[in-house]
Length: 195
Image (cartoon, rainbow, N blue to C red; front, top):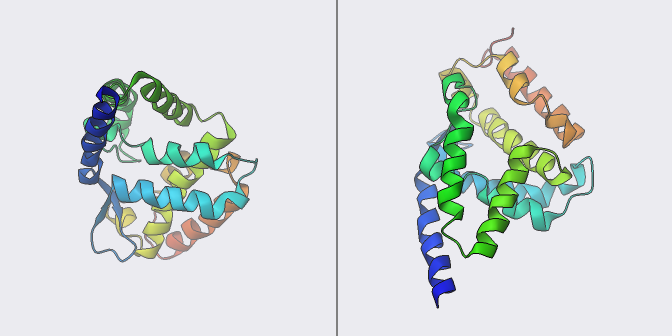
């Protein structure tokens, strides 16, 4: 029962991810999404868009990776993609959170989840590269659907989006090309500042 108790305690703890509000609005622009909604969306996208990965990917790795990649934000908070001050301390805050959160699990599962999180962060394997494509593409799709709402609020520049996505094509050239078309559209509409 001790193992099950640890797992149940972890399940209740990660319920807090539903309270982590992101800067990205839902497609209809009515409110900002939370981390749980974001992670679910990525898992569904992984199944749907697997054919566009540059390399063969194992969904049995990608899906858990995208479901747990933002659990660290329970402690570390959501760091907005274009917040330079927040990005400077993000790794340290998230590593400390990973120690605590994944440390709640039975050792074998905690190690497995921590390793998947580290793999995602390292951005080296085919699975991590594809997971990052999804993580970068999903907010962009929602920004497009909501009329560039978050981009306008934060006066986002094209150079910021391109910097954030400098490795996106490594996971999927086709999805990155699609994303570029959306960025160009929003430059034309004045939602993204061209620079």
